[in-house]
Amino acid sequence: MYLDKPDKVRAFACKLVLSAVTLGLFFSVWACGDDEFGGFEQATKPGLPSVASPEDGQIVLQNDNILTVYNAPDVLGRVLFYNFEVYTDRELLELVARSRNVPQGSGTDGPSDQGDRLQGTTSWTVFPPLPANRTYWWRVRARSEQITGDWTDPAHFTVISSYIPGLVSPVEQSVCPQNVELVISNVGFPPDDYTVTYDFEIYADASLMLLLSVLENVPENSGGFTAVSVPKPLSDHAPYWWRARARWNGSIGPWSDATHFSVEAIAILTPVWPIHGTYTLSDLPELIVESSNNICQLKLVYDFELYADPQMVTLQTSMTGCVPGEFELTSWVIDRKLTDRQFYWWRVRSRSVDYTGHWTDLQGFRYFSDKAIGSAYADEVAYCGVTCPDAVIYRDCQEALGEPDYWWEGDLDSPEGRIYHGFVSLGIRGAMILDMGEGSEIVDGDQSDLQIWQAAATEQFQVFVAEHAGGPWFDLGLAGSGWYETESACCDQSLPSDYLMQIPGSACYMTNYSRGGEIAWCDVSGTGLELIRFVRILDQQPWDGLRKDCYILNVDTGEWYPYEHAGADIDAVRARYVNGP
Image 1: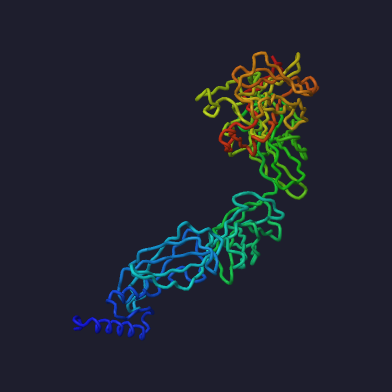
Image 2: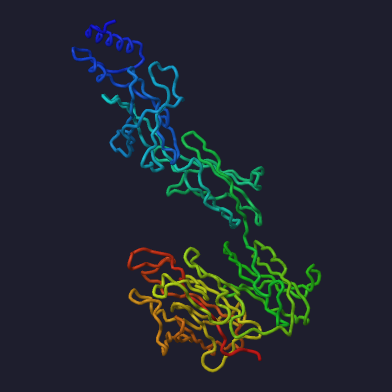
């Protein structure tokens, strides 16, 4: 009706805006003057959007950094865009993330009674993602193509990695009855803004019905982890389940999933020889067991029992209080002769003054005087203790049995491109014990009596020998020249055919191994032993600046990579002079 009267159009628009302001539907700045009507549109700001999530003071997870506002009201119904800003301080000085011109969303979850407000919300996923364990402040404003609205008041939220503490230890493992310690990873609330404590529960069943112990409001420790000691000893040989939750500023988080652990003062032992279904050549065999790992550092002794039947009715002989072996094995030579071609069953356990371990499963074997005698090479692996589980890939100690058979395939000009076969790498300070076999023991002869082939390289190792698996053991000294353990030498260079080297004080000397590596020749005359059945090899590779924690430095790239054949590389062990026919 006023289309032919521009002044009246402007006046009407001013009255319309004034009426909207008077009704409280939105707040804006407008201009009325003698310019064209477009000046009014340019001077009319969009209204303020309102915070949807995260709300002021809300806690959010690290992977949920989405900022959402209810769309701003706009009396002119224009196409709007939004500017977001995120800061690390309440004064809004340290800007860490922002986005310009986020198009207005059109969701249907906004308020429905806001007058000119468009329905729905607008969201922005913060990029780059916000680091956890701190508090942030954010604000937003709307804009049209002509004019930008005002910033909202800043709201703050806290980003954490999880509402639930992570269970660190013990998890699916055995622990000592005394001083059981539960360890969790902290949920990560900023310590300046939150006071965090934790609750712990221990149960006797997987269904979490039999509650045994509750530890509440344990203060959070610094360093990312919180530990608490169980106030009373837990029963030995028993399984347990535990869980944890966080409390902060009057709020309580959800419980973690429960995890299992067991209390075991003394672990079940591992029989070594004779194992079930094998034969023994001797009528007074040596019963061998792998010594307890003794995680509780107890003073242990071992009990052996030998039966004539699997029902354990007829006890043939026994030994109580046997002291542990010198190294990784404990053994007992039975004190009663066996009957030829008969079957027997044995078991063993370890105990301390306060605790008694479980008996092992029965091991059935047969004494057979006509048992075939093995070769001069190592017959069995009595113990395999390869280290560097995340680096060494040549871990099978069985590779040290039998004749030398080391070989490789792949790029012969590049050690990194080769795939090796036929040896075991012991890893740094790894060890193994080889059984030369009944009837094929090492005996003292002329000069060297024992040969050890090392493949691929020349790492140093220490050689021990014994008549019995439990000892006493005799140290023959170091073998392996270790000659390439410098930056300039290459571990795959071939040794000259006339190579011979001996470390002072050692009963072993080294010669060239034609396939690459060395052969150690060891003299056992200094031990005074008549029969040597067991050989223990312990890695003693020098560990210099190029190698650390089972990794090796590539001097060309400066990068550390897994040392796949770290430690001595043992191919074969042979008795030069053998007991028997």
